[in-house]
Length: 250
Image (cartoon, rainbow, N blue to C red; front, side):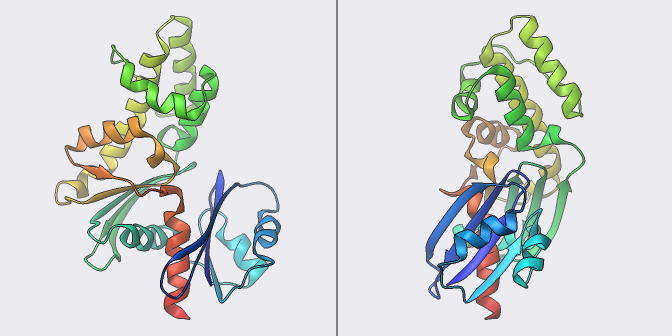
């Protein structure tokens, strides 16, 4: 078994594949303190031929398991190509950052752009807004389709953007319209990052926890005027890419 561990700022993804590149095991767990010990508990009874780590906390795993690490860019490129061999561009929305990765014909990355400056352009802001509105993520993700007013959130800072959400709540704007505004804000930032590459890319893959959000995917497709697809398990793309990297060097 070949294992990939993607330690993100919010969730850690663990994936095991066999020599045929079949996914045998996968787990998504919250990222907490001493996450290396938590990962160790999940792997202690498993057959581990090779372990590769990636993500925000990859060096913690490297130190504990003496394993190779690869960048999130390389991991998501490999993982996206595994799920869709026609992929030309990857848009990844994680809890702490967002990435746009241009691929070559074999799934390697040519170029990328990354936003890790502020949570306003990441999945964390979606969680903050949903919690502020008292909604679970599934309800929040679909409510935007019911909007009848295109409200805007203009702040580039997550703290001030949250204040704008609070202000809209105080003005008794509908939950659907506020939800639209939050998603519109993030979709605009992602589209701005992706536009440089998207005009030459017909096959765009959306990855990360944000890719599970149907309304966000809808807005992003609309803004880029492209069909955007997401794997069945978009959160696993980075850990799958790490596992594949381990298989390649074994």
